[in-house]
Amino acid sequence: MGSCLSSESRSPLPRSPMGIRKTKSLKRRPKSQGLSYDLRKEELLHRTVGRMFLNGSSDIASLFTQKGKKGINQDAMIVWENFASREDTVFCGVFDGHGPYGHMVAKRVRDSLPLKLSTHWEANIKSDEILRDVSLNSTGSVWADDSSFQSTDEESRPSIDSKEIGKHPEVFHTLKESFLKAFKVMDRELRMYANIDCFCSGTTAVTIVKQGQDLVIGNVGDSRAVLGTRDENNSLVAIQLTVDLKPNLPAEAERIRNCKGRVFALQEEPEVARVWLPNNDAPGLAMARAFGDFCLKDFGLISVPEISHRRLTDKDEFVVLATDGIWDVLSNKEVVDTVASCSIRSNAARTVVHSAVRAWRYKYPTSKVDDCAVVCLFLDSNESTSSIAKSSAQTEHDNVSTKNEALDGDQMNVEFGQEWRALEGVSRVNTMLSMPRLEPEKEDIKAAAAVEIKARK
Image 1 (cartoon, helix red, strand yellow):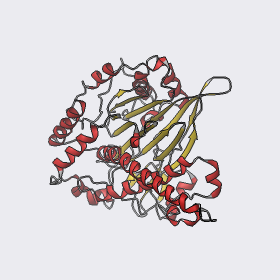
Image 2 (cartoon, helix red, strand yellow; image 1 turned 90 degrees about the vertical axis):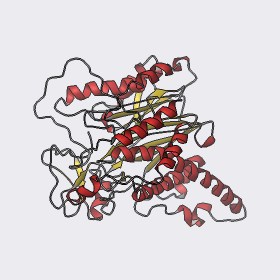
Image 3 (cartoon, rainbow, N blue to C red; image 1 turned 180 degrees about the horizontal axis):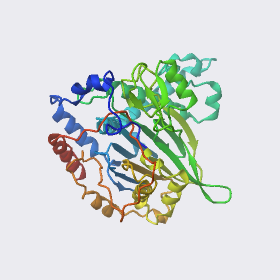
Image 4 (tube, rainbow, N blue to C red; image 1 turned 135 degrees about the vertical axis):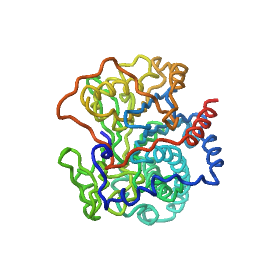
């Protein structure tokens, strides 16, 4: 399910922020003087060895995204091997944008967040080394004495106490600080971007860093990470690694209401709790945390990630990251079984997306299929089954139509035979109230196409 209602199902109220800002938001912004510099910078980033953001695969991962029937693809994804210049480290993430500029927000976060995380991680490692040296001559606790570790975000910052330190390895504590700082800085920068209006646009982010056998997850929004592993009977089981941060969760709802925001579901969709402004029935965001969406940041919406750690074992086979276009129609177990059934791992993400599209047409035939993005990270890449067919996956991606897309991994829907018969009383909704997606302008398409073509060379 998307996170906001579409303009087709509901009109903005006269006093809503969409009505007030509509003319300003939809105006074409003047071209920035630094646009050519940004394109060159983006081109260099896309040429980074081991960094994948298009449909394709590597020895350890499979990626695939496909646009739905709602307009431009607002999903983005990334796999970055040898992350932070460490041979045993991989960064993965999927990002689900919403609102008129959601596709731009998702791709900006995809490109910028890993760089910020790497920078803060390196800085925290150096700080830890200094503090460790100091602690040799001190009887007090390093963690208790250093106030810089106490509050990265006062709104909803999980504290690091002595009990937690004993539960997790050192890499978790260092990465946790890095995640918190990187997410905070990323959201602040989005507020300042002149060429992206994030007032009523935003994105989710579910990200992982795998270093050796340690897996650290940072999550904002309702995209999801699921682990495929073996139980004591050697049966394949699915373990959900993240919580879908929806407004109906008691802790999330309490925080929002304490900040004067409102949480309730519309009568026509009683199962979908949404976040609303104090005095207007807008914007109706169906998640409790997100990057961007600054119209709600003073009323309980936050971008602070939930961070968790898992020590991987030989029984753990792969991790699947996906946007809610997958999880709305497929269960964790169905996704895990689908990945495991693929004889060629390079096809795993594509197969999951195709299964989700079929499920959308069967379960919700009266609704528009949502965008889908999947990243499969395989944890035992040395096995013989990890042979990759890179060329075929990339060739199919090259056939993507560029007419109404931003050309960043977007894929036209695949038709699956006859249309399913409509079921009565079933409909799906979008992420945000009355915020249609914008089609990219021709100049933006050309610029994005040029960057992508160069990135492939």
